[in-house]
Amino acid sequence: MEINTLETTDVVMLEHYGAINEYISNLGSTRIAVLVDDNTLRYCLHHFSENFEHDFELITIPAGEEYKNLKTCEYIWTEMLRLGLDRSSVLINLGGGVVCDMGGFCAGTYMRGIKFIHIPTSLLSQVDAAIGGKQGVDLGKYKNTIGLIQLPEYVLIDTEYLDTLPYRQLVSGFAEVLKYGLVYDRSIWDAYSVLPDFKSADMIDVVAQCAAIKTRIAEADLYELGQRRILNFGHTIGHAIESFWLEKKDPMLHGEAVAIGMIAEAYLSTIYCGLPFRDYLTVKERILHLFGRKYKSVADTPALLKNMKADKKNERGVFQFSLLADIGTCKTGIAVSEEDIAISLNEYCKEE
Ligand SMILES: NC(=O)c1ccc[n+]([C@@H]2O[C@H](COP(=O)([O-])OP(=O)(O)OC[C@H]3O[C@@H](n4cnc5c(N)ncnc54)[C@H](O)[C@@H]3O)[C@@H](O)[C@H]2O)c1
Image (cartoon, rainbow, N blue to C red; front, side, top):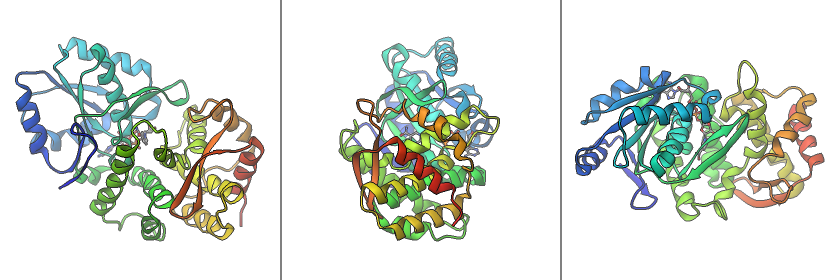
């Protein structure tokens, strides 16, 4: 089933390997490499190999956000060279958001850019990370600081991969699903925020709805000059939290950090954007029910504010937020003070 197209080069599909098999056939003789991490090597490569009709080389990297950096890129570029990839070659990124972001960046820069295909295997990457052309890596603990915007040839979405995804990772992906509900389509929020847990959700429906929204928004504003900024809701505080935890032994997952960010930024929305306070309380209660209370110590707030100062979205040293005017409606480019960010984190920690 075809969901939508970004440009002629970026097609988002469900379970349709025929298109990429034919695409590779049409390229003639060329070298293909598949990038996987430890987990997608173990759980996803088999299903991919059953459906992909061409020979390929394999590049394997360790799993986890802590490896999404230039050191791993150097390894990937070196492997690409060793395996004989040239400018006619294609890199297929088979994995979650880390493999897609980093593989897209490596392909987009190798020999000044070769073609690549994303086959996202986590929920988060199927509904968000693999779509929209943002490729990149972290610089130290700072999220996605180095990168480029370049569209893959294809994004092939096959929900069968989700069968082996650990539940904690599935929950993390649902943070982005709920975000689409809060910033764009209230019916998504109404449908999924009231579930007792995410085990009962129909994943084909979830992925089809959210991938279509992401495609539509990215298509209208590829370079994030306007509407695409609504997708940053929850991410200014979320990225600062994710960066802070990256240095710890048990890093917080992207979606877990975004869930905290969405609660704190919903509180900021009541101050700056007119979100009714009762809606903030509903957002807080439902997200805490599904994700738990993971940020516990306001003593960490100064470190988070320091991380936020390196955020790409800041303009002339001022924090720029995307905030909710209502559930399902988001406004962008809102300057927020440091004091209010600290208050919003304090609010998050408050037991009702
Ligand atoms: N480019 C964008 O527009 C964009 C948008 C949102 C998030 N992101 C990025 O995406 C990343 C988060 O993505 P993620 O949550 O997919 O992280 P991830 O790639 O680390 O995947 C999560 C974990 O699940 C494992 N995994 C993936 N698919 C699996 C499967 N089918 N079965 C078993 N295990 C599997 C991975 O090996 C990893 O351990 C972050 O780096 C974030 O910055 C990018």
